[in-house]
Image (cartoon, rainbow, N blue to C red; front, side, top):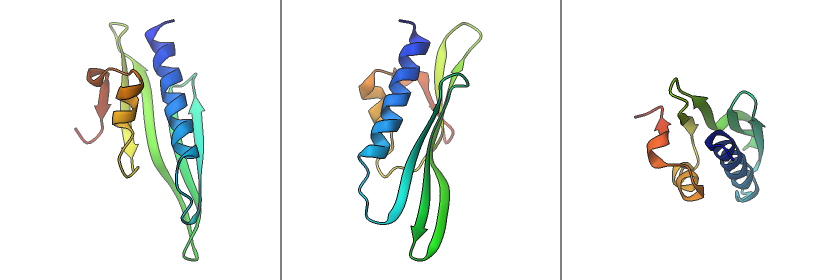
Amino acid sequence: MSKLLDYSQILKNVVYDATVHQPRLQAIRLYPVCDLESGQFVVLATGFDKQKWMDFVLFHARLIEKENSDRQVIIEEDNFEEGLVNTLIEAGIKKEDIITSWQ
């Protein structure tokens, strides 16, 4: 299995797991959105929080292929309390292949 497929599957699994294991303290629901073809992995959060409608991107990662056929995961947004970067590393994505937009 290629590194691209491995990373796609890892990202998909982490995004899906992150939406399942979130505490439901408010009426906000998390939705995993994974587009393997474009390499976009998103967690959307929507719902009412204290009578106010919330709709925002909780997590967004892009899987890209560089010129030398290397793959990188670009973390555009990570608003999980503990972040998902360490979870991605523990799942098998190399630390040096992860770039955060805040680096």
